[in-house]
Image (cartoon, rainbow, N blue to C red; front, side, top):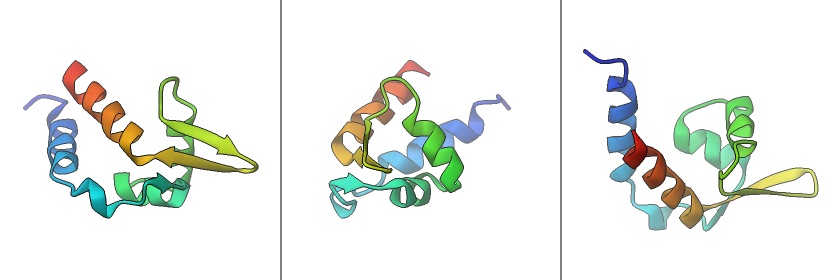
Length: 78
């Protein structure tokens, strides 16, 4: 079994999500819940170049449609 098995399963699960059920603009807690990770890991994602996030004041906001495009690019590159 390859090391990417878990990543492939995660990508398949994400593709089955009804994106319209997610808020158009998410915060870090929404992002953490979406990916099933902790707050710190969600924050680390926001610092990745090209990740669809922006800092407003002391908080981070993530664009739902941008996140979908980012995930599509990540999974198609794998």
